[in-house]
View (tube, helix red, strand yellow):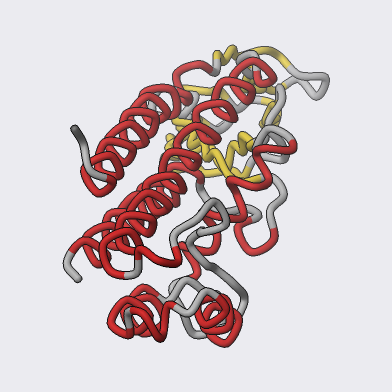
Length: 246
């Protein structure tokens, strides 16, 4: 039969599977955009970029993100319950949960309220001094995992697919000169285009860079989802290992 720490590691493995599935969706996103060269109203050429089905992609990414976050949060919870069960079994009940907060004092108070400092000072110290599951001068990722999981229970963690720029555009001007390495920022995530002057010809439509970021979540707003989830996974693994080593 699995103990709680082994179960926690399985939850992290499941989260990593969701993250890998997410990466498999995000990595080819630039290729999902199609582009065509058209004549514009000024007599020059334009590159028109057509976006993929953004709402469908966003929904899939939201589901994978929420599942990954939930598994990481549960992994931390399993490990904490395992540590309490092992070192302070008399305080283990249905109200036992891993504490997070804005400040160290909030976390200390939550642990002291459950008398963890009395029954297992080492567990208390590992959490407040090593894991530091608080935002102010702590390891804020642990707190973010908790907050994201709570948020996902109320509604999907809707991401924002943000196309950032098109690079390596190559054009030929009216003199026949080749201009390489043109880069342009992109105004949004839907269909967009770039106009060039009369006599200018598009030789290469360039490469699109796409980011998938948190749409609206406090300090994480605008942060890349994939790299953050990988950091969350590393942090959850650190928490589980730290609690298991007591």
